[in-house]
Image (cartoon, rainbow over all chains, first blue to last red; front, side, top):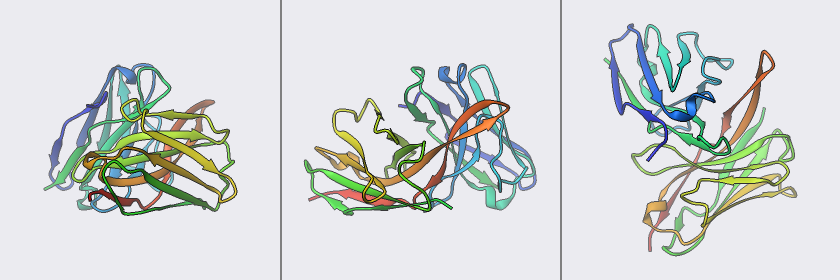
Length: 108
Length: 125
């Protein structure tokens, strides 16, 4: 089991906005990174430090954190955003790392 | 631009040892960073296996700690994963990755910014 909890599946209409959440006690003292993974591909970092976007990631991807919950928001979702999304953070001890269970995003 | 490439047997017998390497190109294994292993069983999510600092310090997933070893091979500029006493539950795609530090307003954040393509490993006789 994961220390970080995500909804298994979420859907969004093309062009609409969707938020994917990640909940865990370890998020209170730390932060979350978010990864996008498409079938047969390695994960790609889309958000680090809860709300920072790496170079090359479209600005429709944004992140936030409040208390024990981190959120990834995709504004005006595109067909190519259909993928699995994973949050990643330290565990409560701070020495180890853990992934959330993942959220499968479907763009309708 | 740093690149990572996993290598190793795609098939391991039950109770045997899984051994994988991750070759680093475009950078040095001695760079001040954490080198990480992650795995993904078929149809399931990502699982953090562990990491090694350029100095050799390691951290492991508690659920695997008794069976896993991550090490550096500076002569080959690569880092390695060894997992003993494997079972079918260890069948997965294994990824190596770099944990990089990002400095935002004098606050450091860490994230896996470079990944290998992944290598599938099946545990079966």
